[in-house]
Image 1: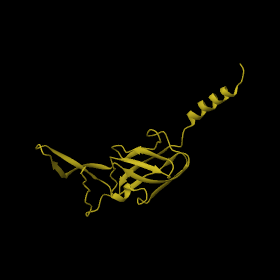
Image 2 (image 1 turned 135 degrees about the vertical axis):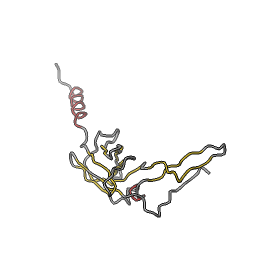
Image 3 (image 1 turned 135 degrees about the horizontal axis):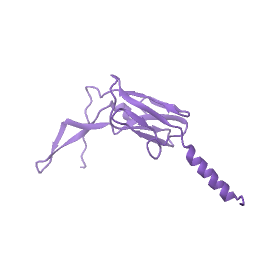
Image 4 (image 1 turned 45 degrees about the vertical axis):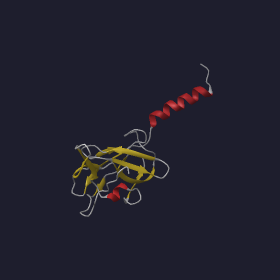
Length: 148
């Protein structure tokens, strides 16, 4: 068998696919210890980002393309998106007599902002990063917007 640069490239690509990025996982809980059971944990360093879908037990695994496929080593700002649930106080009636319930944030809004969350994680190999969040304060008012 003749050794060619193309064969060498194929071997390197095959080996690199198996290596992957370092894994990051953890659990998201409220300060009282109960798990946050909705949303996505987001990591960003301004150039690359990853996400992990939060399970019903509060656990997540980071990925860049799909949850769990890992994220490169580095330091990331961390925040949470899609942490919303239907809010019974936000029932809207439409013109035809139907109703629907809007969703409201279930964490303090600061945790939904990468610059205000106060969370950061340095990834170096296999990393566990547990997150503690707070519920919205008593003065939190959901923002309701329309398409108008």
